[in-house]
Image 1 (cartoon, rainbow, N blue to C red):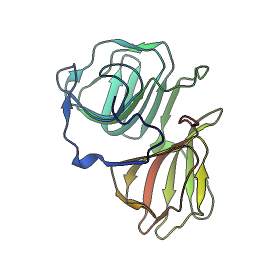
Image 2 (image 1 turned 60 degrees about the vertical axis):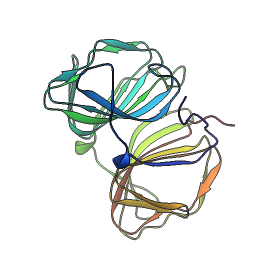
Image 3 (image 1 turned 135 degrees about the horizontal axis):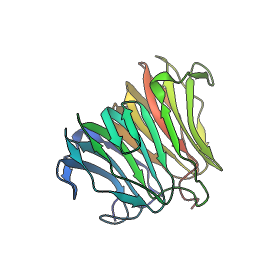
Length: 217
């Protein structure tokens, strides 16, 4: 088990992590949280070298992907950088990348009845006005779980708030901040149930954020 104590606040600069080999040649990963070596609850940054592929496999409790760079593919389509993908529990595919790609991948973390297949090209999806100067792009919602991209204008400060069911963030660009630290692009954050912080930015920043999905401990 790795980083599976959900009562702990985590901040990992993935740029500082070394790539680790996966079972598939040319596919590399940086583990962020992992229940077991090749099964269970897993969150990773994954890199496919050009021309690499992963064997066909099923997702017992779902798979969630955000394409960060390049083009990710499977037998159902091609997904360029900015694509948000949800493959529901029981789905199966054989992924590959002709030109190479980098992904955020979350495995086996779907709510039991969350059966939606999702394909969103965030490059062609409009932003909606959020609180203050924030712009929000909703990606998925099920029960208490919410997933979105959030764009912060330079100098924006958000009110202190708590996270029922926790919060998870990947900083996509810019630099995210709160009273606990400064988080450059590619930093992954996980905050536990009912944690509180006072986030702000000094430069324009875009984050992927998920709330309400962590254990209520």
